[in-house]
Length: 117
Image 1: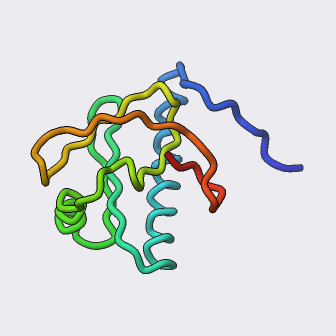
Image 2 (image 1 turned 180 degrees about the vertical axis):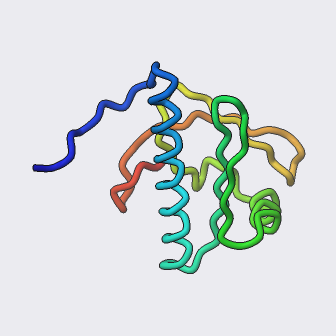
Image 3 (image 1 turned 45 degrees about the horizontal axis):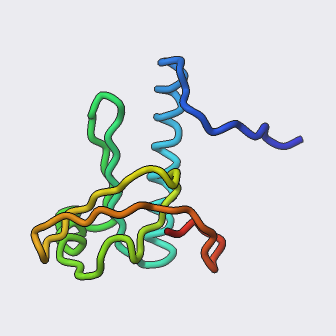
């Protein structure tokens, strides 16, 4: 007997929401660590909970990874992996132009089976 498939929707009960957040945050950070070790890549993970508390993980120095990200010349939509609804707007800061890129993220299957915008 396998695990029961859960429906992905907002959790209304505050206690259940906090328990789910804690467990999934740990799982996400564990996956980020494993990916960085297995594939020898740099990962920076930034999470803000509902009360704006910061949680972060970086496989190397967080500042170096974020600096590398802000200096990256390609528009963010070109390599953005996305698991959000098509109606959600994403705004990213461009360090090269000093302006903002606004684009819409759409969900489609990539060649690797992952979700890609």
